[in-house]
Length: 350
Image 1 (cartoon, helix red, strand yellow):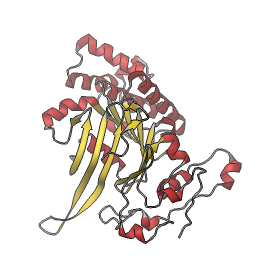
Image 2 (cartoon, rainbow, N blue to C red):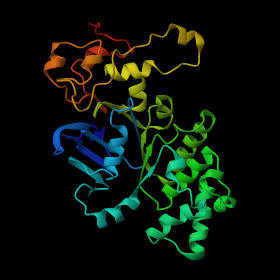
Image 3 (cartoon, helix red, strand yellow):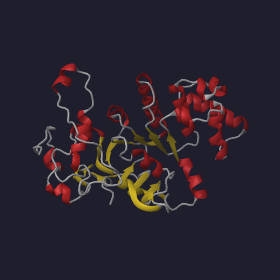
Image 4 (cartoon, one colour):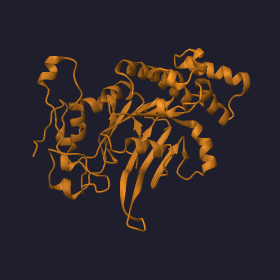
């Protein structure tokens, strides 16, 4: 069951552009002389969510929690261990490679480091023309015109077509990466830390560009980031991931004002506030220890080893993600007690 789908009032939600249901991506651990499988790294372990057309789902969490692996598995760069990924109703996990190649036109990715994701020996014009040629979308003068249109779409001058990636600034390179992803007119963009490698002064420009493109073209985004400030700016809904699982999923305003999972509360407490007086009086939630290994996750609740509210039940039973309010899903035994409408914790720490 997908916990974030349904009917809002008398309004039936449109069919999702992306449906991920009980998705698992486990990598084998091999050892011994014969390199036999001796264990599994559970990078993605039972993830479920949907993305509506024209909306952005922000995916946040610590490094190593499985965000990028989840994005790669959705794109079928990693073939899922089990579970379902449906793009516009088409099941991707069972497609053959030739069929998957045609389907990939509908889903594209923007990588974190534009310098390493752009071919160093190809000009900007060649980089943007390549996907048009592969998918048979434009040739000759039509291709040249389309390349110029793509550059203008991301606020770059067509005069850059003869430049190489190393001749561009970081912001320009990332805009070329955005243009390349838009070349085949996708319905879904996976933005994998798309602005984290850029200077702070450039990040806002690229995020605003992505928002403008979404408003104009109606593309859906899966926006993977560790920067909760940027996620709040661009996202329609936000999913919080911890050790291969989504622990909280809600619309942006609800999650940032009424977070009901201790991990989400800790992440939000780390966001700096520009007002020095408010910042001085705020209480930071410091998580103890490091994130456990996905090869040997804790029993019960995976967050219990770092949670200040952990009880005996947290060690015995794994909390399933469930609705605590319409559109707000949480994987915590004490979600209702941990937060009230004033935003203050109602359960005392252990």
